[in-house]
Length: 115
Length: 112
Image 1: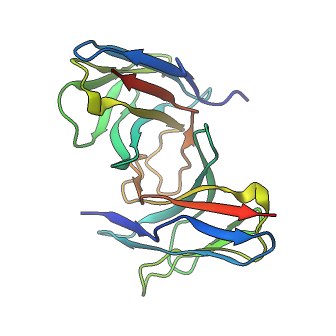
Image 2 (image 1 turned 45 degrees about the vertical axis):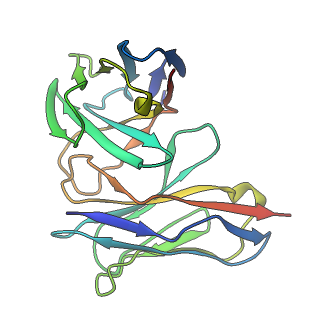
């Protein structure tokens, strides 16, 4: 069974640009969550999508957005990039049922560097 | 709000030493608790989990017990190996909607 696939693995962008990151969940999984990992703030929840609908949102500015397609693949977009957006962006997939012990499977992440 | 507090790292041990990484939490309701591990250049892997009080999660020699009375979920291993060197994250979820709240992570360094 293929795992969670994130593309690209590495990205360098200039301040002010926008970027789109992609996540393909495990086959059959309908929930995709996104996290930002930085040395200063640690791992922070961005948002979660289930069946093409945003079900949960973290405390990030509106420059961070996402969407999910009918095949459960998800993209996140960051507009007007700032230096502080440099981070490892992790995607996690799960079956999607609202069950407390549902496991989340993580991808390897996309390392975004803003210069 | 919900939060997780982990001990500061790095934790430096010799091979075959006993490991404890402390984790305490604050949460409304009854959270599920997790330990994730991150190897260099990789994403997170679930190490173990517990979903109710007194549950013990275990995997690959690691164990953690969900202690509601002390709001703790300490990670232990009786004999660490060099290959256990990684960053360990304690996390909780209260919604079941895959919104995990993570601790800051504890780096473990094991020397031969």
